[in-house]
Image (cartoon, rainbow, N blue to C red; front, side):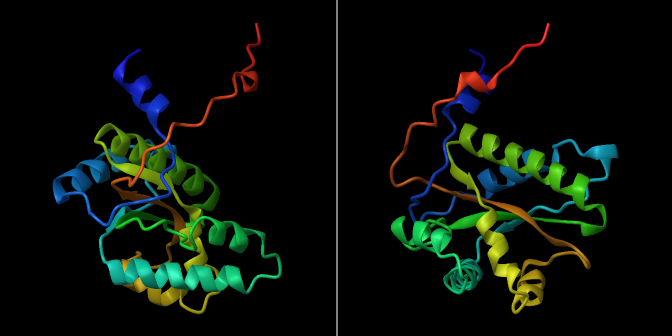
Length: 187
């Protein structure tokens, strides 16, 4: 198996991080892998924001948990509470990817491609990771959305697309078992 396929097969979603932040050199390499992602018509309707500010991460997590706690349907909140009560699983840093909502549908697809580049680059460098849409909860109520957009340095008009949590795992897990029944060949 070649190295790329090996990284894809070994990658798992980490939900338990050490407090140690990866080096700037590693984070830079991951960010550079992100921006090498293809985008529709090369629009690149996204930005890559590496966040190491623990206070900002904590504030977004607190806002997101508050949003979940106030929802009528408590299933997501209860699931997070069962997993330790932390949206970001103790990750010491993250990459936030805002997108241009004027190009929403293609920008969202491109954001997913970019985040996949992040997760695979991180895995190849020994950095645990998980794609995390929960970061969007910090922007969901609108109460602090503008504040977080400014603190993160979103370009004017950009909105949250997705994020990837990064760090070193407290414990590693096996990747999920792929369901080969999901593959169909048409001949």
